[in-house]
Image (cartoon, rainbow, N blue to C red; front, side, top):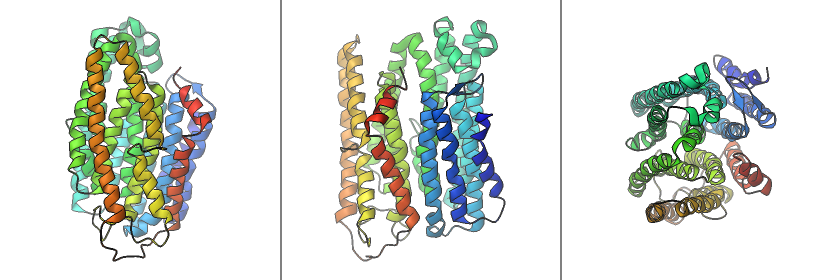
Amino acid sequence: MELLTVFIPSILIFLLSYLKINPKLMAIISSTIIFPAIYLFLHPFTGEYFIVDRLNSFVLLISSIVGVGVSISMIALAYRLELSHNAIKRFYRFFGIFWFGLIISILANNMGIFWIGLEFATLSTVYMIKVKASLTAQKEAWKYLIVGAISISLVLFGIILIYASAKEVLGEDAMNFYALLSHAHQLNPFLFEIGFTITVTGFFIKMGFFPMNLWLADIERASIYSVAALFSGILESAIILGFFRLSQIEMLINQSHLITFSYIYAIFTLFMVSFLIYRAKDFVTTFALSGIEHMVLITIFWVSGGYFAALLHLAAHAFLKPALFLSSSLLEQHGKYRFNGTLQGYRSSLIPLLISLLLLGIISVPPSPMFFSEIFGFKAMLDVAKDSDYFFLMIFAIFFIMLLLSIIFYKFIGIYQEALYEGEKEDQNKKVYKSEVLMLLLFVISLLALLTPPVYHYIEGIIQ
């Protein structure tokens, strides 16, 4: 019964989207998604098909906070983008479906149910992209449908192989994440590793990894800012949660294979993304591509045993990236995406200050939580290198990653300087809505909370 309550807000949002609604009222109703997430965070339970443990309750909580921020931003965004009433209703209708599928995916203790939830979220985002009435948005929605179909098909095929690897040992429980983890040494390693590789490739493609790096950036640029925030702050967190679950099993079967596959795939993706970021001409594309960079780091930290670093980085990314996307509505100048002068011309210095903190936080400048997560993450990589037969290769990988990150750092510092100091000061009275200030404050407070000792202690205890 307690599990059913978590679906009530999403169902309510979906039903109300068919009525004539007030944007402020709808934002308030949408923000109620956080209450069941808090309840499940405090009351874990184990079931046959669904489970609430410290890992997925943490992911659900940070996702719900992002959902609240997106809901608040929609109040002002409806006016900024001059969205029609029908467009707003369509967004909330598919946001309700998106959140419904996301909960299923995050809380699933069954690979099949996880896939169904992910498919719900994928299909609903296709229609959310089309909320923006433009030919580009229509085209990118179809592109996402095609890429999403490819990635989700790979995930399904991989799950079938994983099921086959455990069928003789576990019977019908072969789809159960926890059953697979507890019987990892009894699985057919050949079938499991093939299934794992195919499934994870589907996950990676869905997060914008090689070879499909640009589709995610194109979609987030073409859609409204709220959709980009949902992609980067919520959907990617749910996808990588699936990677976390399966990689824990693969780690028990063959840790060296896991590290080799993940490192090669992730580092090659980071190589491609770093130069795409360097050549980016607008901040929306830059923000989108940097999200792939952070998913790469989370992947590497996780398989290196740096669970604390990976989860802290995941939470920081989940707050920082949506905040930057939603800030883009304030930064956008005359309908154009550009860097020059975007932090100039506000009546109050509060908005430039908040956006500056977010912009610097995403490149791990202290005291950003990402600064500390990367320190702990690289320490975990060094620990793996010390215990590895390929010590010098691991050290080379670390330095190569740091070199690529320095390229991204250089680009973002350039963006910040152009936004703050360069450009004409023709518009000195940029309008800011109260809901936008509230949204930014919510994300900044959430990021500061990640730096507190109780939160650190909790994250350290998620994976014992």
